[in-house]
Length: 481
Picture 1 (tube, rainbow, N blue to C red):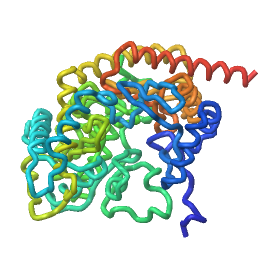
Picture 2: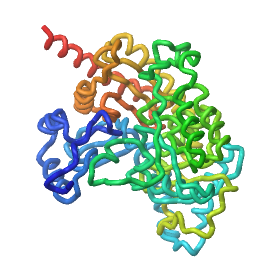
Picture 3: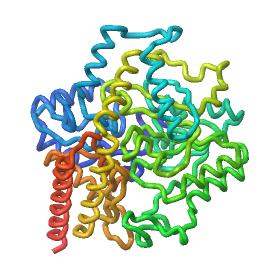
């Protein structure tokens, strides 16, 4: 039996969507960098909240966040290239904060039975964006979190198709809710007997990930972007999806990240092949753009890069401007077939304040050209990372789009053995120098800066990364002498 005396196995960082909070390097960093005030607040935090991996206990204590920076209680500033992907427009953007304050004075809440102009305006705006992606008008439901919005999408797909099966991908993350974690593929959110049986009807296939794919990988690249040689792989990863849809025959939806937030970028033609398979078998395609949407990859939707229109899109995280929680499920208008069901019945479904925050966020993204900035600064970063790879044997692969960037650390490039221990040490070396980022799947340094990041700030962050890698290499050489 799995209870407090018999906990489930500890989290494996190699199967995690983020750095876990049990690292010895973490403890060593805290020993050196926390002051008394921070330790006191962390102790209160630890005593007040339920503990879980990648969350409580916390690393440090924060007191200020503005633009691309966060500041801890001890007064240290960090370039925040993590931010849980909520800080697209930077922290405390004055236009977003001002819109929230004005809306609080005008109308602070709207019961669901009454229409809220701000919520309607936001739904109309997102529907127009959806139409530009799919060529079809859309309809919207709002929730307070991305996990809930994913579950709305799943429910809608079940109702619309009359089927209950859903296909996801191993290693994907769609949220911590019961349905979202069922269709997601991260062990961290699924393992242990305490979790027990998950939502019935969910199946999984292997995700795309060209660097370690046996059929096509970086060594067989045909261009400067490291795209795989498709004559070798023949999109075996997409064929897995087609195979399952053919054999099952009654799958309601495929739920996927158009660009994996690890990150991994799909090979050319992948999503077009999956779209064709879905069309052939009456299966809906749901894209989870919670971390990748709103411009993160240098396009408003990450799906725009691949020429495959989804039936349903889910947005969240940054939609509230890094201030308020709001997420959206946007579906084709012809999927408006569930009027007899309460499948997205949330108290704050049409909250005027969260809607005002989202509208202001979309305005900032448009007015300040942040999608274009993400593409420009991201291209510069990828070029620098490719140069850095030539100097550092620890880097096995670099990849990304826009400001979704990954540095895959390996013990040697021949075996591609993940250097999980190295990535963890580099993370805390970087924090000591004023850069915060995320480690994903244990060994991938994942940099997801806000869309307002300048080229100078990107160069500052990459200088820190390179210094940390050089220090790690020097110490490694000394240990082998």
